[in-house]
Image (cartoon, rainbow, N blue to C red; front, side):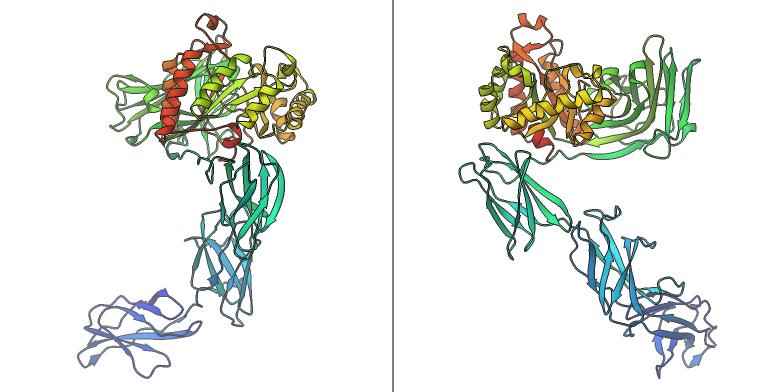
Length: 639
């Protein structure tokens, strides 16, 4: 006689089937009795899929073993209700107020829930009225473009523990459709395709112009008289209350978009969340403690160097960086004025005999948060270090300035894989001597950025209004370099704002609007009031003289890094920096003031003209290879 099956249970539920399992597997066959059916169902394993069931219906089942003609005792009875079918969800675009769809029109189906894909804790609860499903999602920070979400109807009162979630439908949050045709300054027609009967917002050279409604086929077209030679045209598609999708292009370029931002693949290597893994290697006057305030995670580790060098080491690592082209450091500098440099070491051994080190100098750092990316090829190799072998140890070191106490909180080290960079050429002040460099760029179909000081127009040492107007029409950006080039850190916040606003008005009056809200700080000077004044004024970008490759988003970034081509920086160094930027996937801003002869470079405002020609040639070569986008500040903000 077969044993009585035990632990009968339901292991899987759908709207039309139930899967049962039990623990006994001694019988040759099993009979599953479903209440309401005349005959049992026969199975030869201790798992049974019962299909052909009715949605939202309770079923009771028991099972017995069968050996030939001998049937054993029935198991205990298990009762389970089938789920309701998955709802049909309409295409959802970010910005829309509701996720809409269709669900079963049943009296006990009055609600539904939305979850992150694969999760069981609901983010939102919606309604189902006569089969019409709605979930309000407008402005919800959890609803993200490209992410997937599950929707299930709720059988019964959603606040009752006895309610049952139904089958899952998964949808992806999408952007509205947007395609843009090439634009010419002769026809001035801005046309393309968006959602049927959708709206698009049009901006020309950083000035909002009009809103156009597409037809039932999604086609839109308008003539914009403001389009001039090399104008920067941006079109944004509306979805709900937002304009989440945009495309920008240059008039007369023959292209349908600007170059895409470089792609960067990051992988976290060390998060500094385990203080005990980091051993303080330095002596008196140094310390390392957990920092739960200055962190993007649960904690960073603060290293203190009081008039002496401090360093700590982690010998517990086993890191693979074979595919990495760069490293990225997230660190919080408590006071940049006290710090001389920070150094990060990666080693193939715990004794650090075979290591690569990266020095981050104080002129590359600002007080507060810093995200610094370095090409692995730029590191100083000691011994036989190779990234092909596992990294077994990491050491971080800080050196204070003389008689100072420096503190740095290390929060994250990541590997970076990249093969493309942005490059911008910037000429501050619009000196006459910059004209030859701009001509060199033009000869290679590359554009420049020129920092314009309002009062310099009447100074013979600088470019005239006519010359600047010609540069604007050729597509070069004319950026905001203040009214009269003061030391900003000596001015009140109100006076700094006046400097920015006056120059912006001057640029706007001349129709040089593409970069009128991108600000260059005279002498590189700034203070906290500078950053606040720019934010309050709605300015998009600010650039001091902090050195390095920028890896942060430029929008709202008032501490954009640059690479100042002073005479001590050779053409070989400049070319290498291009290669390093490609490896980091960042943006490299080359800064010049005046170009001239070797003799003139005794003045630090000058860089050699022949070197600039070589640099432009090298960047053009990398651009032709697809490794560099040569862009302007206004284009960078639209990537």
